[in-house]
Image 1 (cartoon, rainbow, N blue to C red):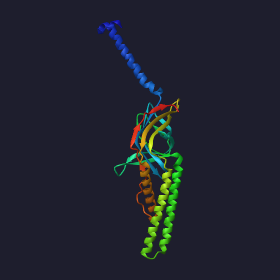
Image 2 (cartoon, rainbow, N blue to C red):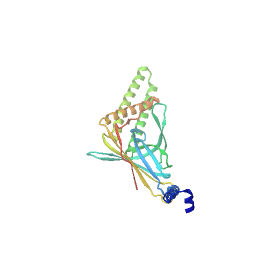
Image 3 (cartoon, helix red, strand yellow):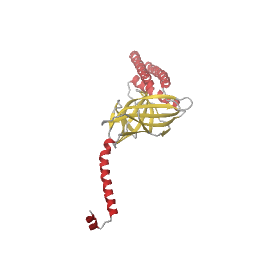
Image 4 (cartoon, rainbow, N blue to C red):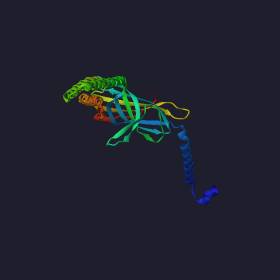
Length: 290
């Protein structure tokens, strides 16, 4: 060794530094190989500010956009829990039930279409790739009420159609037929107003400030230690004071068009009542144990 050092003309201190750097490089390469086997996979979940509420046949629902990012290995998502909490002097909490998961796709118009492909929250996420699911979540305590109300409206509209058909067969003149259709239109308007009031009363969203919280329970998809953990994200949103009035008008228009389609056997497009909060703020995302 001394002869070699002498031939190279290197001082002892420089040689020691070279050996130290070489040793650290070797250790670093070993750690790069070994550490991933012991690193715990983690899921980062974040709700984005793209959120709106819509009353559909499933009930009163929130359409949410999330971003999932996995590090250090694949994970298995086991459960998603959502809760909307009204803040202020009269706080109130609304559990939301995840009804479907899907994604955005480019539609024929300027806006994206939503395509929902599963009703189960169970799925796998691979590391270092982001996922952007669209979550359809309903106000779980009132889903059945809205569904039943819409079903009753459809049944009553069918009754109006059957009565119109029966009366129209005995009408002779154009004046008689016109009178029958005017009467049917008035009956449809009365039916629409009746069920607009019922659905408006069943609507849970109200003016005020809210926090919306998402908790995603997950675990590593493989390995000996598959302890469950929770990734959480939250939004702060504001529903304006005019929400009730505008939503009620949209409810009326939706029901009237649906009833008219049944009555006249048409297929006009139906616009479902929607509301987009005008102020949405992303809150901090966290990791915790369940």
